[in-house]
Amino acid sequence: MAEVEEGAMGNGNENAGKKGEGEGRKAATGYRYWVRGSMTGAAPKAVPHKLTADEVEKEKANGNGNGKAATTLGSKWNQAGTWEEKVLSSWALGRVKELLRTVEPVEWEESTARVMEVTSCSGDASLVTVRQRKRVGYTLEIEMKYVVSGGEKDIEGKMKVPEACYGELDDLELEVTVSASDVKDSAQRTKVKQTMTKLFLPKIRRKLEEFEAELKER
Image 1: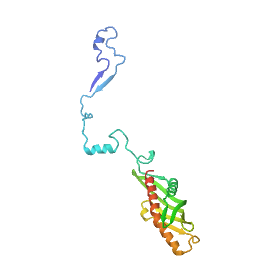
Image 2: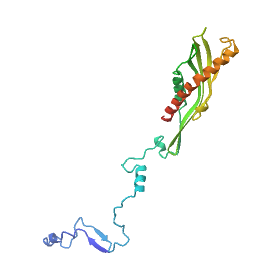
Image 3: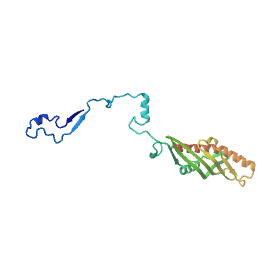
Image 4: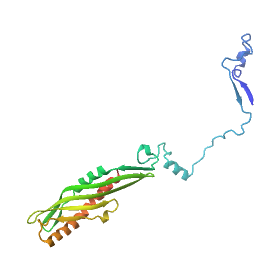
């Protein structure tokens, strides 16, 4: 290696013209450094490399194509998106009640039946993020009161959804009860139950499908 004394370089002419001021004295700011005689083993010079189509897609997927970080699901602390559960039961129970109160009335013969009140909605709902994928789930039990008007006298009763689960609304069941004091004839009670089930079940199912769609966006 060659030793070079800083201060001597570039100042030779100036020092030559200043005899008597300490000829041979090193500059106050001078320092030494070494230069490798051979560049063998040094880092190679950077050469531009054109990305392939696959490499471009990978860069975009990682968010490097536009300088933005890749979008992640879940909380900020869980950027890896391994596993995270968000409990949505409180919101879900309230929202289902709101939706079922708006079920449209049904009509048959000269009678009209409508939902008076959603008396109970229990169960749980959650959203789970696993490996950057959202998975929702819920299990609910719902009870409602109804009234049928237009006949000789109003008929009141209850409707119950024993179990409503995510992805299983095609198998939804509805249990209808009719008070024997309102309809004394057993055959007539059976007819009311069957008619109420047939007409109300599709409307209730549509409301729960609407609820599912909203749950997925939470």
